[in-house]
Image (cartoon, rainbow over the protein chains, first blue to last red):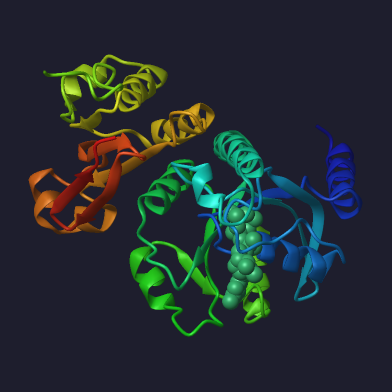
Length: 212
Length: 134
Ligand SMILES: Nc1nc2c(ncn2[C@@H]2O[C@H](COP(=O)(O)OP(=O)(O)OP(=O)(O)O)[C@@H](O)[C@H]2O)c(=O)[nH]1
Ligand SMILES: [Mg+2]
């Protein structure tokens, strides 16, 4: 290939990147039910796009369909990192509709559990096929070494996906970030409160660094 | 006069006992991922506790979760409990970690029906399951 063509091609590639940008990486937000995934997804989306991703709730399995927010442009040090964020349903190995009966009637509880199981199945499928990186959200007030967390992180590692572990709910007194860092020493652990917006600068630094 | 008082008797196999299937590594070796998942879920859905000598690969674990989810229904299946030994932390040190050589292939895996296992507890070198009869 001639020098001119080569230069023209590389200018073409550069401008292409400049204007269209590369395909944004698809970042899956995974973690156990109720860890604060949607609260985090909403905060990221509100901070950088102005609108939210989906409803948050103290009742587990609020998110029952993966929800995507595309082209979230995060600015860091004059650089823009564009990602798609995918908020996924909390992963579990069991769902019993009877656990929702305090909160709703039987019909709604059965529907909620059916949707939850479909959503988790879909989220597992996505993890095998469709995500380029993972934010793994844990509730820092809970024991981080559950079987689901160990399995999920093992699955993520086996796929060689870049991963950040978010130790959420640091606003709560019982939060224990060190317990999470000790459990997963091989990964970057970022403390935050998605609800209160604590430590979000560091969160975005890490997101830009890891997924940019 | 002895009577059938438990309408479920027979469906869960002989008597009220809990059946445990210990599946050797050799038995699993010849199976595809989906066959392994099937073998586990068929056992668990029959009320058995399935113990795998060799455990599953991460990919197989992810398929196990996916298929488990698709089979949960309000009438008779609420999902699974699963624990592996040694745990990732124990794998580096602990008794079982040393015994089992510390490789990922050698993680004893215990899987049971969620609605019958009241607690499945594990620490460094012990797994203990409290199983309730239906
Ligand atoms: N104190 C505190 N509560 C939080 C924080 N983040 C989320 N929560 C609360 O935790 C509960 C669950 O939050 P969600 O964002 O719905 O959790 P999720 O991980 O999306 O849950 P599922 O969709 O059910 O898997 C809600 O009551 C949130 O308000 C936090 O940083 N601090
Ligand atoms: Mg959610």
